[in-house]
Image (cartoon, rainbow, N blue to C red; front, side):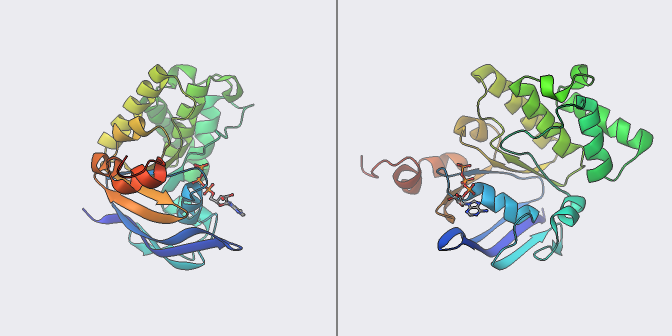
Length: 242
Ligand SMILES: Nc1ncnc2c1ncn2[C@@H]1O[C@H](COP(=O)(O)OP(=O)(O)OP(=O)(O)O)[C@@H](O)[C@H]1O
């Protein structure tokens, strides 16, 4: 499989604070990569650098065979990146279907029947079809998370980026969202998923990276990474030999 995304020496600082410290890794087409790390480690900043809402101070980013380091956020979205946000950001006064249509028309550049057909397909996959005519502002937290997923998928992405989508859900709700994301991944979608709810990540991703102070401190098979000294010492704050 080819790489869909490559970061090569990506750096970003806010004043004296380094939030992306020489980040280098690649995501293969169809792979699901999990990202964990303490609060403030720079995980969301990394998403902002990948999607182009922030520009890197140094390093290169390649996506879908092109160097996008200098490409703006809208063009990266059109090239096939889509993300969910930590705090769901739907248009609360519009229905679920209307929110999906905005993503399909603006993100996937579709119109008319093609846009409607895509939205219906995605709403079925995200299990929101029966709520298509509900106002987004009236949805439960789980369904707002599902709508975040819907809006990202309606942009017809090649890469789906999830930012703490499982946070705040009950165990049953989380299990139901995991099943949805697993099915989307099984359909071939490449995924990068930042998450504090580690068991949700471990149910989906094939590889895990750990970010601390903007630096990638561990990378590999998820359970091996969770058992690693780096995670125990730095992420969980436990002495290695405790
Ligand atoms: N625009 C900005 N200007 C200055 N500092 C910023 C800016 N955006 C983020 N930061 C700082 O960068 C650091 C990394 O933030 P970021 O949101 O990427 O962390 P995170 O790993 O996603 O955290 P969390 O798990 O809590 O969501 C934090 O110290 C944050 O305060």
